[in-house]
Image (cartoon, rainbow, N blue to C red; front, side, top):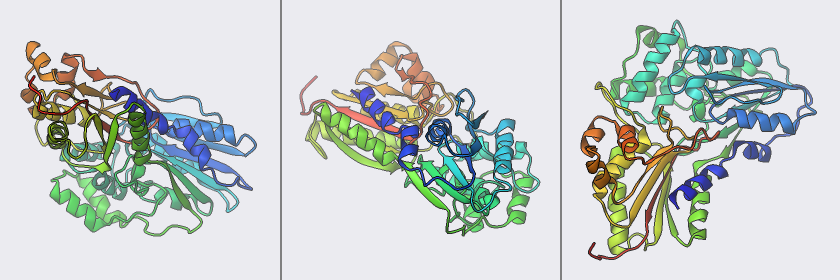
Length: 419
């Protein structure tokens, strides 16, 4: 049941179908397609097929191993979550693609989660190594995605609206798939075609609060490059074509169709992964024992993007979903009739080969039988290895979309029965 709920959520976020629902009027001139993110290839392929009679070209970038044909649109592959040389090449090629356009031309920007690392153009005198160092520090800091992207935008020559400026005088239409709590298009893929509301003061505060190590060239770039664009041409438009709320609605329908009461707790939940696991275990216990806030059989659904704070220590293998689940399993302590699933809708939790995992009432017992200490694995941020050790990882492969995390906690019956 949990896997069916997750699959329904992912299926509802089909990138190609979403693009076709939101295409603008065809241009009188050329159409240049650019894009970055894990859903960019499917979006580009659908657009190319739909506009076979339009003078169309372009380039998009996705994660290594996830490329596929997209007709007349070139597909590049780069690294996620830390950029590589191909990320820098993608940034260069995408900026070049929007040069020399006219007011009769249109740029369609296809943006989705992962775009921040897949497409980079370091600001000032920064090197790729400087950019990689900043990214690693951000990922380990505990900052949320909006805060991380505010820093990235101010250290880039393509993010934070700068790609839209490069495309002038052409009209820019942005079609975005949201992986951001709150669905702010300025934060999706660090908003390369969207005016940036964050400021240099915001960035300095984030860097100080999370003790983010900035290389000398990065600190100098912040001082030299100034603010990101705050106003862009009025003719430009932005449409969020798929959002986490729609995926949770699909998950809710799947549960209802199975005779299970869904309760959607929100699509923008943030915080430390393991701590959210503890909170959700408490809610699940209340459902089972007291029928509050919903009577079983019920499923608690939530989305958003939690964080894992690594700090300066060495981390094991894992992602925010398996870390959430390990925190949940320890707090639930074998609660009868309670199972949980958490997975990244793109099919990749962190940098691993699993979307997430499943927790059942006997998770801890099976782990002890296999000499796996749940608390030690949690302290070491080694949640992937824990669930791999008991065979409870869920592997979907790359899904081609990204509406962030889907969490589902199933309570099959209630009461204070004695087990």
